[in-house]
Length: 186
View 1 (cartoon, one colour):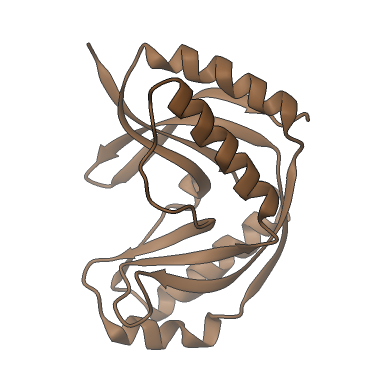
View 2 (cartoon, rainbow, N blue to C red; view 1 turned 90 degrees about the horizontal axis):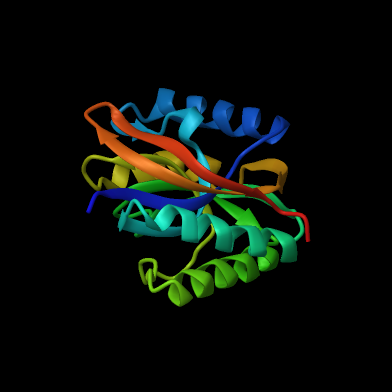
């Protein structure tokens, strides 16, 4: 049985995407020690599935259609820089989402659907964010460099589609291949 690494996410679109990429470039000039995510792979993850059997794609895709019929596109504000686990030991540099109740409801529906399909996603708490970069070593200096950007706002984003991605890891970073897609029509 062949497996693939997969996750369900929402792609970023519109003018706010350009603002996010510009912020990422500005940060990169100050923080060359951070490995920045390629702009074409920026997305909002709703559920990370890990390695799943390839034949599960069809079941997940069909179930995603029913979620798309229930949920309308979501409007969120993008802004507020942060780091996981925190700014004193940053491993992941992220941009937050505000007004995310609709996203939390959508996440609950997606994880419920996956549980019914006996493919529960990872059990980390859902914290809507966009990963901008990863730190090779946790360094408090990175957190201090991020401080002037913590309140940076990028604008309003309309999230309109769910995509089941395959993630292929390469030496130059992950490649995300869309395998199934459904619009939010609710």
